[in-house]
Length: 294
Image (tube, rainbow, N blue to C red):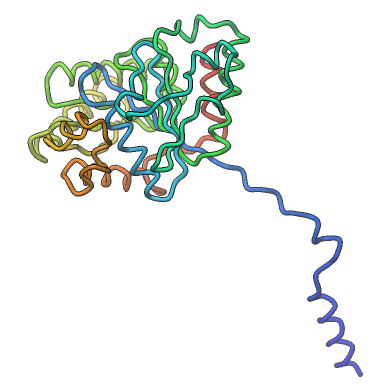
């Protein structure tokens, strides 16, 4: 008899509770990581890297958004060869919602076009900044990673976007002027108290030794004079296929997936995978950015 009662009790406990079936567990909080791609000067391939990095991250199984945050000379849509429905200036003006201007690229990346000629973000009214922040925050609800293609140089808008990112990827080339300007970007972020992960990616190198030497030069100067650590994001070879893809207005990782530059982007994605240098922060990127404007 005792065994029969125990058996019945186990059966009752194993049955689904009709009340609890309607109660869903709380959805996990999405921790969206943000990568700001910057450069101390123009002409180092920053936007092209941001594009190809986004595509490769998406191909690795992440939900990715790419935001052209160049408020002066936004032209990522030209490189992408896409027809945009609007840009961030329309969102600021209130004539369009973010969902109206987002372009879904064939590779799964959500693209948001920048606003050429828009006034400095810091000069926008509080209402305009709030509207822009609230709209852009939708990207964090829909994506695992957001890649921010910042404008070239160390202008106020660039520093605002970069300061709020989990990781800043400073793109340079081995040229002395590019290295000097890259250090200027690192120094500017250090002065602002940047607390994320700061990395250097050397583009258009002739060989591995040149890429490594460029990183070590910047890392040593940053350590000695700024007392900060700069991570090595690797290097990208000087690759004629990159120029060919640009002329065809295609991403080189799609046009030439096995070329040296594409393999280098793949190596970078591995460094940005879980367990890499990315810093997780609880507060959303765009809300952090909005606080920086205050």
